[in-house]
Length: 350
Ligand SMILES: Cc1cc2nc3c(=O)[nH]c(=O)nc-3n(C[C@H](O)[C@H](O)[C@H](O)COP(=O)(O)O)c2cc1C
Image (cartoon, rainbow, N blue to C red; front, top):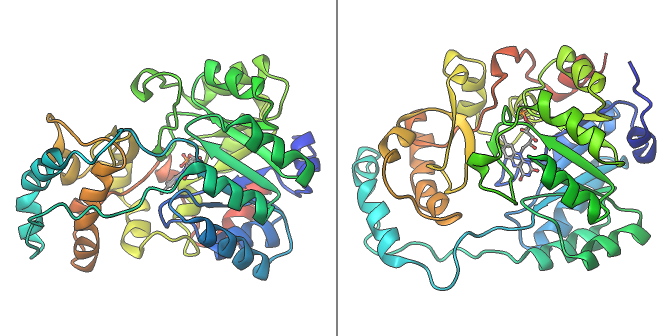
């Protein structure tokens, strides 16, 4: 099997394995560094939740651990509502979840707790460009032309993500350097940006070769790849690298809490579903009570739904209540074997 692909050569990688970026605090500098340094893969850090200064600090932390190439990742679009916060809707959602708050010993907040800040993509992108990682990857859209233009002279490779052929073509037209074919098997959010995520559900086996045929830039297959067989299959389909998420999230170097990591190895990880309940955008995770409580009613737009469900998170984690937190998980969890990223990478690349 070809490991010396154009993409691997351009990035100076020894393997064709990309550790999927995890936003929202699930990435760590240590995980990215282990993947980039010890195994010659591409470690990545999901930074969409970070302020520009924290993005610069993150790059510095990774560089303090390795001199090898790594990627930083952002979300081009990070809100699904315009104007003022819909306070009434937020209060209704809190009321709906009141029994869950009480079970955790929490009083449902009387007023909207949502003072959170939504970072602007432009400000974050400037920070990534300043930090100058080997790779700037992004989901949920195509960055403005000036952002992509600024990357090239600085030697930053740009990678967009597509869930359909149309999205891949839009990214190729914008002149990105590589495209992730994001299959519906993947854990976490469906990063669709041209049509509704629910109408853009393609499996990696179908999506990857179609994008390979349609664009001239290297394609990275993502979704459901958790062992060597998946890597070989994706490369046979024409991918120049694979992006692995769930299997790295399960490793002790990831930012996932121990409770979450352990569940990925258990039977409940075989029951995943795509739902908007956790964050307001369609995402794959282990089905639990949180989804069931919220099925069949209106949800808040992203990121407000996630801000409300996150109010339960700390208390649920402290009480070991896996039924009341978002547990991101892809469809191939039953293939997981490794709890250390170096061992996983070696097995994927062997
Ligand atoms: C907790 C979590 C957060 C994620 N955040 C991002 C993100 O911010 N940006 C991104 O491009 N992909 C994100 N992903 C997707 C992964 O990088 C990867 O593409 C996907 O998990 C691959 O599918 P697999 O899980 O089946 O291996 C996330 C996945 C998880 C589980």
